[in-house]
Length: 314
Image (cartoon, rainbow, N blue to C red; front, side, top):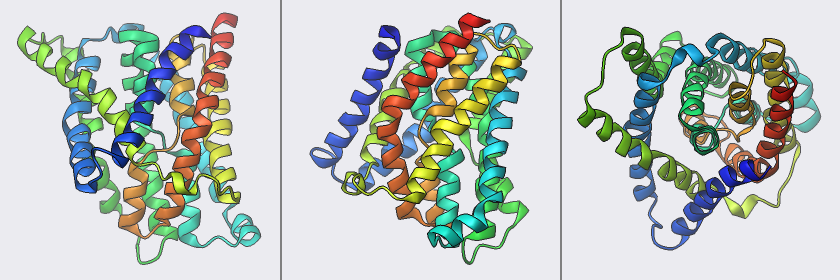
């Protein structure tokens, strides 16, 4: 438990620092937008390239991690879509509101997941987390865009729109490039590995502060059905399914810990930007993200404790 807390406390302190900086030294939205672009397109991809290029992938249960996370994502997605009509009738949700419940229920916050996995599990955990990232980003983005295109107004579903959104994701390209270098055995010169390492070390604290800067604390006291359902699916149902599948697939520690972390972190801030672009209920999603951030203080430690117990049972 002490090891888990030692990994989690700095993560949430960095998030809190982001909250503080947004209200004091860096009040400009443009400043945070620029920092987010820097982190999204440069710093985090550098971290992922180096992690996947230098990792011993023979020790990573790639298919077990992939299967556990992807099946859990599709199971939760199908459950939300199947219950859409009765939920909208019961709670008076609009189509855009449902899309925010959906995104809040299936997306994951890459910054927090890597921020926890790296100090807790080291380089091997980071490599497994990169595999998890590569597993989850494509189906989550496809599902989110399709749901928004179907249920948000003025957004006709277009296959090309989904493909463009995926092709523009630098995390996917970074993981693919790093794995390619790893598989062909191409050595990375020391000067370049040091350069990528320096960029990668900056990515985790920067990404976590950006998460804090994006929280809307003014709405934290408002809890409604949309928040409860979205948070319950994301931080209870999805981790339970993913860890269960991982366990029965024979995945052990530390991969099971990465599955626990990846599935129990809050939803992703970039879902908010997607909602704004495609006509979703962006303010509702921002509210869901803020509540989930506080729930994560408890959900991540609990899922890691369960993962540790399952890992020992293996």
